[in-house]
Length: 234
Image 1 (spheres, helix red, strand yellow):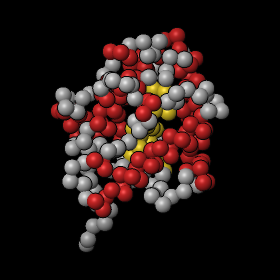
Image 2: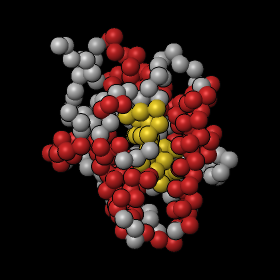
Image 3: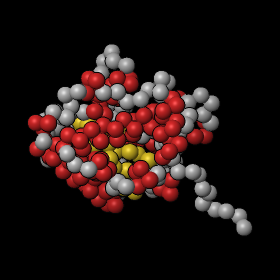
Image 4: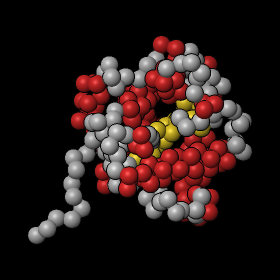
């Protein structure tokens, strides 16, 4: 199997290091990072029975062993996205953020790569939506159309005091459903492995937020839902 990762978890990481972050919001960053790790762990447990346990079977940028030593971060992310069968987007209302474009770069890169996969498979580009899944963490009403076409799994009740995902029956069902879809996609790509999906990964690059800022801002502008308050005073 040429793919190295069954899925790539894309989420809004690093808020705790943002300049000027209100100390009262530190727990938000901690909760998001903890959720991403929890999701990684449970997906690994669910996939290990059907897919050989590979290093970084589920790619998460918090895992040191998943990061290429000495390579720039953008090169590592580009290679990891290219070598992933699926992407899991942990969605919050600020996932597509004009001020921090790395998530937009990951999503745009994966969608671009999946269109190329569809061309190799000689199938409709609409199939690309079958390989991107949305784990809704916050603001489900803000999920953009580009992700609404995909399968969604609700984790909005998760907070910093939550038990591990495996201890929540509803969450466990979500994990099992998500893992089943990832397993099916992995097996499909394995069946078509002769098409050499990853041979050109050394030449694949996601857009760099510094060098391709305008392109990414346009991607965000095109796809991000305009903010609409839940409650409007009469």
